[in-house]
Amino acid sequence: MKDDNQGGRARRVLRLSPLRAARQAPPDGISVREKLRLAGRFFGRGFRAMLGAALAVLGLTLLSLLLVFGYLFVSKSDYFFVKKVVISGLDRIDSEDIRRIAGLDRPVNIWLFDTDQAAADLSTLSWLAEVRVTKSMPETVVIDVVEHQPKFLVSLGRLYYLGEQGEIFKELEPGENPDLPIVSGFNEDELLSRAPGVRKALDEVFQLAGTLGARGDEFQLDNISEINYDAVRGLTLFARRHALEIKVGFGAYEEKFRRLGRVLAHLKLRGLFEGLAYINVEASPRVIVRYG
Image (tube, rainbow, N blue to C red):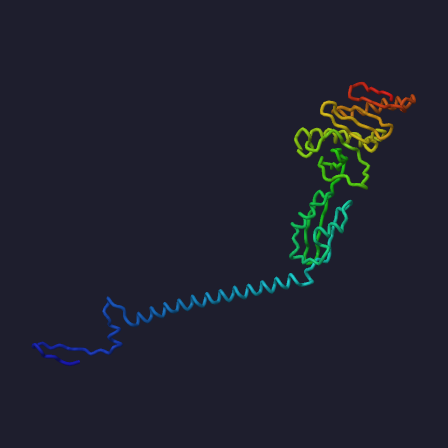
């Protein structure tokens, strides 16, 4: 500090160090310290962001490696190969066919075994109505099968199996000789259409079959060779023995066969059963018989 008497006035001049001068920077400027602090904050944030990104990439890399090694272990380890196949519900279908079509006739990793695909492949079997495929870790596959239950053969130019729900599921093959009645009078397009009228007609056939199945005489279902359907004339039966034709018509099947049972008992008692060729139970309350 020094005195300056120039101009008659004394002035005091302060000489400050650079650091103190920086600290006393004018308010409208930014001090060096503030600049250093801001720069440090900026670079610190950038460093932390870069460090976070690097750690994230490293974590993803490690996770990917773990997944790859885990997949290789699971897919190649003998511990996870199918060692037991449990199949239930088989009667007509061969268990070896089930294994082969499902892809279980060779080593299969249970983690890679596709149950939905196996079920879809098995559904191509003619006798198979329903199938459910599940797996139980670490080594078991369970296959539950429901087979079609044939009720009749149906004549459509060729003979086909007709199931309990009125479904056609398989053509009769050479060597197969099922002891089933033949349903006739339908055509293939009608049955495949599943139209309401066809469904109603099939219901009539099944209702009559239910009545015959409960009988224990010549007209029980096992003794019937053919059930013919006619949209106008109704249902007609053909017995295996004596080539006997029974005109039934539609509806009231239990009542019709009760009347027929009483008439047959009377005919047998009088020795008049042999030689019957035709019976009509449609014309209630009468039973019409004719000899061949």
